[in-house]
Amino acid sequence: MTGIVYKSTGSWYFVKSNDGQFHQCRIKGKFRIKGIKSTNPIAVGDKVVFDLEKKGDEETGVIKKILDRENFIVRKSVNLSKQTHIIAANLDLVFLLITINNPPTLTAFIDRFLVTTRAYRIETVLVFNKIDAYAIEERAEILYLKDIYEAIGYKCIEVSAIENTNVVTLKELMKGKTSMFVGHSGVGKSTLVNAIAPNLDLKTQEISEQHKQGQHTTTFAEMFDLSFDAKIIDTPGIKGFGVVDMNKYELGDYFPEFFALKQYCKFNDCLHLKEPHCAVKEALEEEEISWSRYRSYLQILEGEEETEHFRTDVWNEEDD
Ligand code: GDP
Ligand code: ZN
Image (cartoon, rainbow, N blue to C red):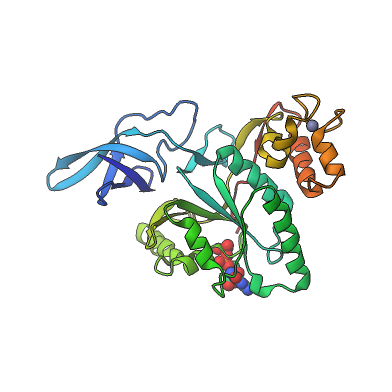
């Protein structure tokens, strides 16, 4: 049988088969996926092949195979071991929640995040939340940011989770897809998800789960089916994700507006720094490229220049 992993506790995987039934599965032997050193071989969102085994009157599954992943996102390990933890696989859409204040979301954070999702090939939508609460200057800031990001191809939506403004637009985008919501602590992720799917009540679920298992804050990702043909992956305590290894010459490729101009740079390994006849720098002078985007590019590049390969890192667990 084939199915999708909805939840994992480390030793058990809850797999929904194509006929809509849930099966508790485990893996037999060692699963190794080439090129990935991860603490968990199988993640939420993975498509797997499994067999059912009957022991007494209990029927459980044994996972035989993981189907190729469209993408996957990882978490940086807390210690220095090279191991990573795969948070989720096969995501279609990520909503990055942004607030201007309470808390502020800086463009450096937004741009790092967008580099990461582009490297992972995951469509990203920018969601400006709390529009009910902004004065004129903050409104202007949103319009300014929307101009920048819409011009380079990112969908931007203004919402109010509390007043339900434009929540229906988000639901339209989520249809038929697997989505995830990320952003700084306090931007309104839980409020928004509860506005989208009132029956889900993620917080409550999380607490009862902890209570049941008597364990403290180890947070597992979990996928939920929503009533309107959408799937959502909830990762409590996660504001972003990251750790993409890349070469410094690749970085510009994940800034779509730089990538589009790269072919017009004199050197094909142009880093868009001080090279002559650089189309990116020329566009910047003409204000066709945003200075804040270029600044983020420099920050990522300079911050990591010592090593040839580096990691973009927007991953953080909530500090609180
Ligand atoms: P999370 O940490 O991202 O899950 O954020 P929460 O959903 O817990 O929200 C943090 C705070 O922001 C709470 O006090 C919410 O009531 C508030 N909040 C969330 N969405 C909105 C909104 O659309 N407008 C306003 N004014 N406040 C909001
Ligand atoms: Zn250049």
